[in-house]
Image (cartoon, rainbow, N blue to C red; front, side, top):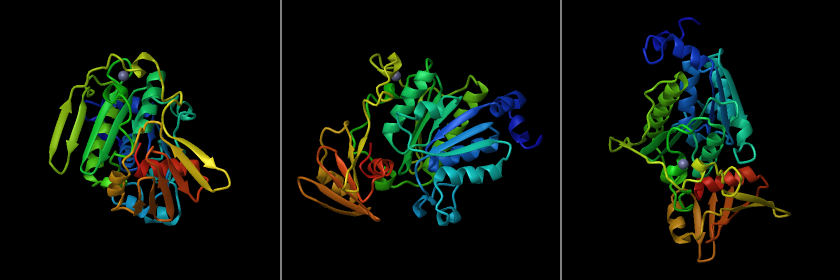
Amino acid sequence: MIDRYSRQTIFPGIGKEGQRKLGNSCVVIIGCGALGTIIATSLVRAGVGRVRIIDRDFIEYHNLQRQVLFDEDDIRNGLPKAIAAERHLRKVNSSVEVEGIVADVNYTNIERLIRDADLVLDGLDNFETRFLINDACLKHKIPWVYGGAIASSGMTMNIIPGNTPCFRCLWASPPSGGMLLTCDTAGVISPAPFIIGSLQTVEAMKILVGSEDINRELIMIDVWEGTFHRLKISPRQDCPACQSRYEFLEGQFGLKTTSLCGQNAVQVLNPEVGSLSLKKLAARLKPVGQVTYNEFMLRFTIDAQEMVVFPDGRAIVKDTADESLARGLYAKYIGT
Ligand SMILES: [Zn+2]
């Protein structure tokens, strides 16, 4: 045990005191895909005392190309990502308290899930939940590290309440749904999330040990182009979240789902979308599934799931009563 962290404590930025701080810390990782698995494996190996991993999905074969914690046995066993991550990581470092939670993070549960955290890390694939994390973390004065990766590019930024601009200073509102790229439509190659997840991990270490060296800029990379940029972000004077108005946390925005009685279907409403070009959406979805559309609606089938999308951004997910599944499919293919 004494030697487990020796190579890390020799490093002056951490040291023995830093190691003690890591051991006394609790981090929450929201989303356990490519970013989440990189962050979780690194922080558990680094000896962070408590690591809570929250994810709503099961593992599929197309995840294994980049989600380093999972293997084919997990798929055969039908394990949710949060549970598989917990099982693997307990074997990696039994002295860390690893907790996997299968849940759809939303405005009704996020405060309970992060309240005892020293730091929250974003391993998400959708914008909507990031605005929610931003509200909850600002309200409870918990630092969080934003990270996102798609195709060959990615971004990350630290949000320290009362100290740096926040996520809503960076993006006033979620980019218009339907036109957003997602990993399911634009693809992703593993080095992009690996690098962003690693940058998030190092910032997590710095924040937890109380280093002065934390990054205060937006970092953008493209691994295919081989580029690395830093951008200084200014606080936005009219940012609601910075003025303690937590609109996402109050449930004013974001996807609304309703189970359609007797139809075995779930309706997803996205108040953020004014109008949606079904033609453009069809072009984007064509490579990943079956698409037919006219000016009134678009029908999209992938695997056994069928979704009907309307020009106002509304969608009906068929053959399910599971609202969190419907929200997940919407986030994956339409984008939020
Ligand atoms: Zn702000």
